[in-house]
Image (tube, rainbow, N blue to C red; front, side, top):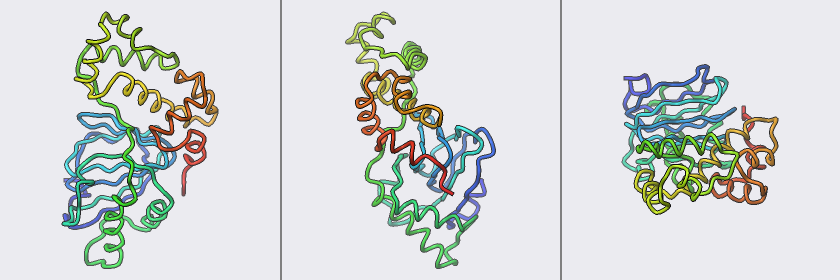
Length: 260
């Protein structure tokens, strides 16, 4: 049992610089709210790899095994762990990544004064912390597609590795099928069956998630990042990024700095 679960009825709060390269696989009996500053965090479950960029949070339901991999040991993690409430709805049963608006940001900053267990006997702080959780479904209307499933098929894993290695080139579905000796029809079925999405859906998300990593590099402009993920048109890149991430790449660059 981790320290988070020692007191089953508490809301546990923990804010800290990562200070390490990763947190190995574990789970909690409580649901976890995780917000990060100063870099991107990669979170892996048995089924998917999630990418948590700046100005977003991830909700991890109780019992979901996961490991956490920050882009650097300097990443700050802000965590709140909640027990189950009678008022919980289906929102809390699913892993989800959501943008953080100004109101939620103020609430996150307010929790910075807490550390450790907040018990029901601490009426004021417990009520505020419980309200934080109850507000999440109201403040989190758009679950962003910032995750990719792991391919089970060996050939498909090879294709995905090829796409990652050549992310700066536009690889067409036809070329990919020919390269790996598949008919387009058979390959389309394989993507849908193994990954639950089409080639274009997977490829687009892969390019945008790679762009998120590059945008953390202050030495690269948005236009350079667009080219690094195979886009010759900056407007097309910006529009696609907006559909997947929820903000324009230029807005993301402005908002990714740490908020202390």
